[in-house]
Structures are given as structure tokens and as C-alpha cells.
Length: 308
Ligand code: SF4
Ligand code: SF4
Image 1 (cartoon, rainbow, N blue to C red):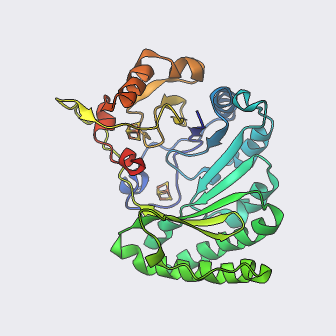
Image 2: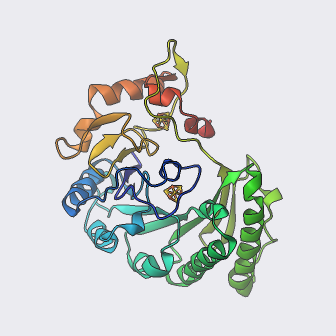
Image 3: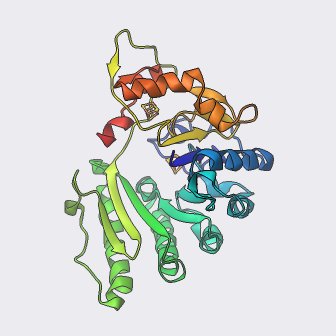
């Protein structure tokens, strides 16, 4: 398994219209993972995977223990990876980067930072522009202080006409940034435009290990879907390459299952290896291997189709 998604909080400070948190106006039960549960999650994650994320739903940097959790990550060795340290791929909306950027740059546990900059398309322009500036300021420092760190500027809103104005502005700023950084080293490339992105070319290098990535928006599968009456064909990488632990300790199959529709066990009660080898988990995984979506939540999922 590559990674375990550990939802350290389900709370977010934005309300994107395409996200369950935004759709429900932030009225989901708010939860922040306790320190004890977090310690259990990372030590269990290290027995099956090499990398973790800190989200399913929510903005991880809002957790008051965020920096403490980075420190704890630095101490965990990974059985799957020859005893190397467990690494973090952080996905953040970037609105707190001016506050937490220094800690991210200083932590050897942080391998990659993904900025969900598509979220800014729904904000008032002045606010969005400030967030983007802070993100690009972070990228600038990272390019010199942490050249090993991967950074992804995500625009996961391809095809959404209402985001086009924002996307064009963002690309303009990213091109200025590239001129300013890569340009100084004589490595500047042609400006990136929206027309450059297509289904075969979704990611472009900005500078060093900084990329811009466009993809389509994904739909969160509906909760409490009724089981299909016939076999639904399809497969998914969940339970093979990743699984997730919600902020209350429920172990679920994938990073879309914020409401625990496919709860396979509780990390407080069993090891992650035991839960991943439970009959329920094995049945779902066997279904994927046979091109069958056996769980009702998977049967209504469109996200897995993007990897075909
Ligand atoms: S930033 Fe992410 S978690 Fe927050 S509302 Fe938007 S999509 Fe949801
Ligand atoms: S098919 Fe969809 S809902 Fe099911 S495990 Fe995969 S990503 Fe999750």
C-alpha cells in the first residue's frame, strides 16, 4: 500500500459548493483528532504504507496540534520502506500557508504539498488573489530552501466555465512566478495557458519540483445508496494503494468516504493490518480485482473512472 489518509479534522474554513462540507454549510459534526488517536494512526499507518495524507474532508492546518503532529511524524519509521521515516503528502487549501509554511519547510517529514487552488475560484477576487500570492510566496522560498519538496498547484475544475476567469488569472500569476524563478536560471519555458491542458497532458512543470495540475472536478458519491440489483462493472485502487482513517478512528476504504459508508473497523480496536484483512475488506478488494463494484457506495462512485 502506498498511503493512508488520516483525517486529522473534518473542519474547513472554506465552503466550496462541490464539497460535502460546503454543501452542508459546515453543519457536519465537527471533529478534531486527539493526540493519542493520531499517534495510534501514524504508528499503524507505518506498518502498511510509506506515506500519509492528513485529510479526507477538512483543512488539516486548522488543527491546533498541526505542528506537533508534524514533529510526531518525524519520529515514525516505516516497516514497509526499509525503516525509512513515514512521509507526509499534505493537501491544503493554502489559506493558512502564511502561518504554517515555515513549519512545513522545516519538517523533513513533508514530502509534498498539494494546494487546492481551484477552491479560490468561488471566493471574492481580492481574497482569492491574496491566498494565491501567499501560496506562490511559499513556493518561492521552497524552491531554494526545500528543492526536494514536490509542490502541486491544483486546478481540479476543468470544464467548469464559471472557474475560467480565475484559472486564467492564476496561470498568469504562475507564469510571472516561473519567469521570476526559472527565468533567473535561464530555464524559463513558454507561458502555460489553459489551452495546453488536455486529457493526456494534465500536469506542467513550473520550476524545480513545482507543478501545475488541471483535472476535472470529481463528484463525492452519495451516502446511503441502495445496493444495485445487478453486478456493476468497475474497479478501483482503494485498499490496494490506499485506505483512510476518519478523525474518530473509523477505518474506511478510500479518501472519498467522509461519512464512513464503508466502515471496515476502528483503529482503536484493531491493527490496520487486521482491518485490511477482514472479510469485508477482502470482499471489496476481490470485487475490484474481478471488475465488480460490490459495495453500494462504490456502485454510485464516478471518481474511480478517472484512472481508466
Ligand atoms: S477547501 Fe477542500 S475541504 Fe474545504 S470546503 Fe473546499 S473542497 Fe471542502
Ligand atoms: S470505487 Fe469510489 S467509493 Fe469505492 S473505494 Fe473506490 S473511490 Fe472509494
